[in-house]
Each structure stands twice: as C-alpha cells, then as structure tokens.
Length: 271
Image (tube, rainbow, N blue to C red; front, side, top):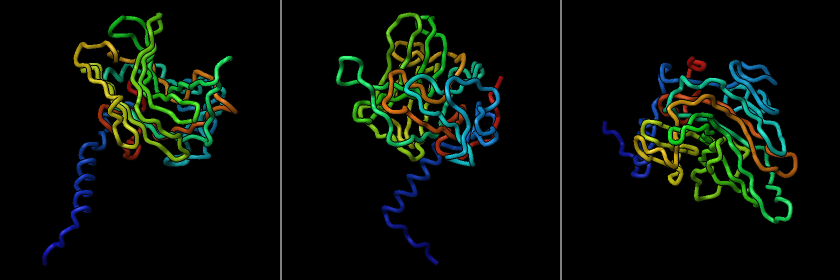
C-alpha cells in the first residue's frame, strides 16, 4: 500500500514545524536556572526567594498555565516587580522567557507640563551588574517597551549606567499593540560574544539583535554576571487613568532556548 503524498503546502508546513521544534529542544533539568509558574505560591504572596517593590503578587484571575499568575496592579508610575536578590550563579549567558498579558484599554502617556506629546518607557525584565566596559554600575534592561500617544509601542533593549554616562540601547522599528491575550517574549544574552536577541511569539525582532563579538563591549555591555534580576512592570513616566495592569506567567531562565514549551521541572535558582 502506497503512502499518500501530502499536498506541497502541507508538506512545507510540516517541515517548517519540524525544523522549529528541532531548533528549540526542551532544556534538561541541569540547564534550568529558574522555572516558575506561580501555582505553588499563595494568592497575594510572591514566590519564595524573591523580594518585591510595589503592588505585585500572585493572583488567580488569569493564568497562562495552571491556576495562578503574577499580577502587577495598576499604578501611575513606578515599580511593581519581583527581584531575585542574587543572580550571580546564572553567569554571563542565559535564555529567558515569559508570557504576559495586559488589561485593555492600556493607558496613554501624560504629556509633560507645557507639552502636547509624551511617551512612556517601561521595563519588564532587568538586571543590575557592573559594566564590562567602564567598570561602573549599570542596569541592563533585557525586555522593555516605549509607548506613544496612540497607545502603540515598540520593544526595547537598553542599558542605564548609574554613574552619569548616557543611557543607550536599540529599538524595534515597527510598533505593536498591547494585547489581553498571552504574549510570549524571549531574550538571550551572552557575555562571551556580546550578543543580545529578542523574540515575540517565536519570531526574532531583527533590529534588536546585537552581536559585537568577544571583548567588544561598546553599545551592548552584557556583563559576566548579574547581581540580581527583576521581573514585572516599571513605567518611568506617568500613565493616564489608573495605569497599567499586567499579568506574567511561566517564567523560565535556562542555558538553552525554552521557546513555547511547557514549564520545565522547578529547580529554583542555583546558589
């Protein structure tokens, strides 16, 4: 009995899916630095081993998987984040991923006094470290957004030096719209090659990709290790109305890419 041939379009799709799966195999337990689905944390609390700033805690109103997620309550500005106080064991390279969703409609920027336009810079994932270029303290913001007066936004990578040097980074070219559906974001940083990559729902944003090469720190400054890492929502400029309400779920940090796979076995954070 002959095996029926697939239509060309179906065959191409199957091959593409096979290649995608091959590119993002599930990480082994030994590869995982952190795996958190928030289901083992009581409502209103934060996971063990984290600290927090602002109105943030586990909630049960929405979840990407399981029954719980991390909810950032609305605020006009300022942090609603959880922080790993020690992240040095993660080292200079990791892949990270999380899912997030927004309460719609999202707020608009509030123009500064005397101005008719403004913007909102927000950070979702960041880590404090020492710059490999200047030796000063820096905050590396591995996932962020810049919201304009229409409510559309661009994804950002940026670095904020703490000693007076100017902030720098890269921005997506195309604007996106915030969604009340779960959105997958992934990031990859590598100190050895001074590489940064960012993906949304499995697709890389090419204009955010940075690859400087070994020892070429200017314009990227990926550190050899992070002192701590924070996850949540921090908008620096004021937002209209009550501010942003955000949910995060299925947060993973690993040595290899996680993609959209299920949350791996929980390992905690390596000490």
